Length: 125
Image 1 (cartoon, rainbow, N blue to C red):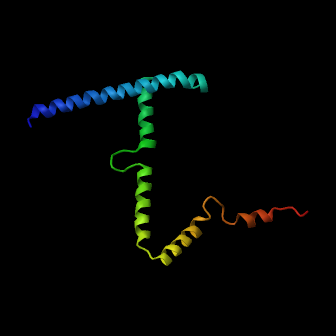
Image 2 (cartoon, rainbow, N blue to C red):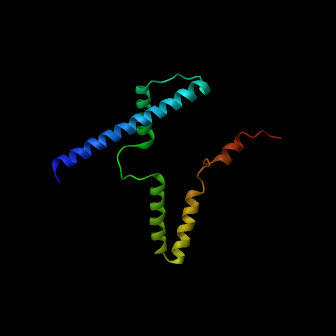
Image 3 (cartoon, helix red, strand yellow):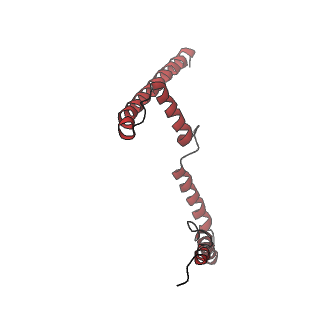
């Protein structure tokens, strides 16, 4: 491959990447300036502020880099690994594992000691 081929590809990529950024910024700015001032009495924003908002949302919600995978992909991989490990257990070990997981996960979403703490504040009838 010669050098001009790669240079043309790089220029083409830079052109389309910048076109995408400008288009995404314009769409975001238009939606913001159409909805936010009307619904929330917020300020209208400039194109530079729109690009900053897009970068900020990418940092907060998207992260950087590739190959990390989404949360759903990681969850699916974790479930597959657990299923693979559990399939190698004997029926007794599998039942023991199930009981341990139920015991460990039963308190999720509940405060520890909530019934005792609630009984302290009950008024006598």
